[in-house]
Length: 306
Image (tube, rainbow, N blue to C red):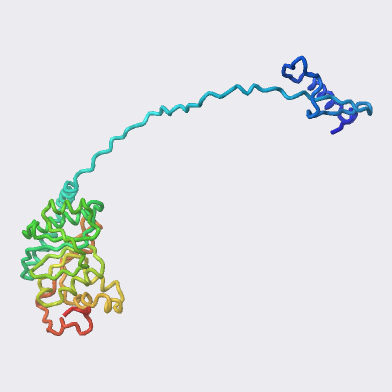
């Protein structure tokens, strides 16, 4: 690149000064002042004559220098070891739920409703079947419903050994609790197909339509329906909230029973409002005169039901 002094005198002056003060490495006595041919050269045009000024040779570097091994310093930030409180045994949490149920008059009211219902239907159940409870180890509502089950057994003198219970969501901790309580934990999922052979309380909180229908269809006889004391969501709510055509195909037994079921609704629970909402005690009206043909199906009950 060639620049005239007239065009950029300051740049030429600075460049010359740079050459003068440029630091240079020690040069052996045998080394020529002028750089070898491969070094770059800078040219400046001065008074229209080419004056070649060599650029300083490359500085020699001592390659014997090495970085010391880098050792990162571990953070000395103090860690706060938070002591996590141990989770109480599952049975303890269920007992606490029982205490919550007993704080007001709600549980006493429910037990009176149940006892009056049994007296009116001349029923004295000695066993209880629980389906669809959920997992007490993971759900506060399930723990409350289990606590209510224990209150039912206490109220009408059903021994824990006569309680059968099943839900596919039960955990190992749940099953261990049921065994500790003395319940019979059913191992097979029968999809609600549990035939009754004696007066039985069925505790089925918040189950789906298909499970209720399966229980009813399995016990579709005058005698077996007479054994049933169903504590569950009011069956009439399922009739009101589903199209009749759907009920005729998916839940024909429930649809037919809706007119002959007597239901006593439980009051709302202040302690567990979502665990016991829309729950009632239900049984077939013993005074209803139902002909045998009513139980024969006539295309209304599911296939396989007598």
